[in-house]
Length: 265
Image (cartoon, rainbow, N blue to C red; front, top):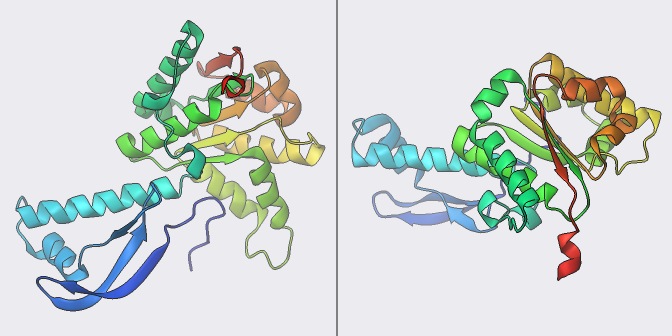
């Protein structure tokens, strides 16, 4: 039996009896979409016929493949951890009104566009600086882009949530262990850890984040770290050794130093 994910949820589904123009009354289902809507799936028999029976290159086969691909991307987006508030956050919707904001946008978009190269190198990205500067917006944009364009498994979560999941593993009825958590977080093609530095900074919290980052470092898996602190201040929350490793191999650093956009409503 597959281990239940602690970070990637599955889309909600609903089954019902529906009409198919070809097969009559059949069991149908609708599945939750990343934009919050529900979409009715194709008839299972039609989908099977398109994939397995129809000739390759035919309209039926191409449509069935497109259905399969769209469902895979939608499932990856819903499982990405992007919250409804940031579901519409893309590079196109980021308002860059100063040269510094434009540089931040271009660096993040370049990281996402060239993710294949950064993935191979295990190259990290640090987004550090003031609150209200759009760091989570850009981090969510990166996650969306690498899922849609590179078909990567990408997840954004907070440092606090990682620590909560670790703590829950201590319960004998948790159904998973600390090792399971480490293995899952290390398995993602891209992991974005948001709000690093917002936690209390205890020795336990530091050791948890250090272990996650260290495992990904050893597997050459890229990580994006998002923090309201400057890069130097991260060491007290993830450990100096982990910070040093994050910076290896030409890691990218974006400083967010302008006034908060939230106060300009």
